[in-house]
Length: 266
Image (cartoon, rainbow, N blue to C red; front, top):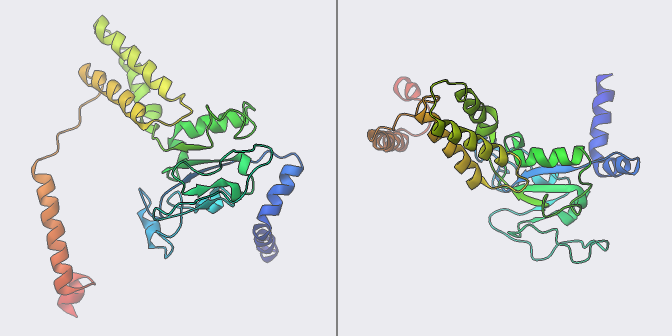
């Protein structure tokens, strides 16, 4: 029973391209939204750097681009693609190449329903621009990359709106419940929240705008005592870090790999 299920799954994987095309032909709406431009293990996923293909595959840090954006071609190491593999006669002159020339979506199974976010790591839920694109597709606002390319470009970028969405806007709303706020501070909190909420509605990523909105909220929330400013890092910390890093390398070069216990007792 289990073998039959695994065999069926593996067979489906072998026929994945045709299965997707068959699903579309049957009326199923299929879209791909992918992160790209990272090696396995880059950013927060260091565990995956142990893979032998790390640094050789264009990925979102965990899964290769050719899988998450099925069939899409991506280069590594700064290599670029001179010309896209396929042209679309329905959209003459349209380029499926990324702005930096490292990705060609024309090779994808569904090139007109594939969106790629450059330098975007696997957890795309931390990028509200991705969520806004997914919402537009779900609600039928757009059908493909040609529906509204100015608002929902096929190639977009990384940004991290998680702190604003999950915490900082709510922190601001909690601060407004204070009864001892000056009119000036209350007005600034309201304006800062509005700026942050506008950022969450972006459809073209702008990390600078995210950081500016968060900095504005942080500043006023520190002022009114809603948040506690982070402690300033000790001036000794960077020096200590370099010292212990040097000691670690010295021990490694002297003793080689293995634990200290192994070196002492074996």
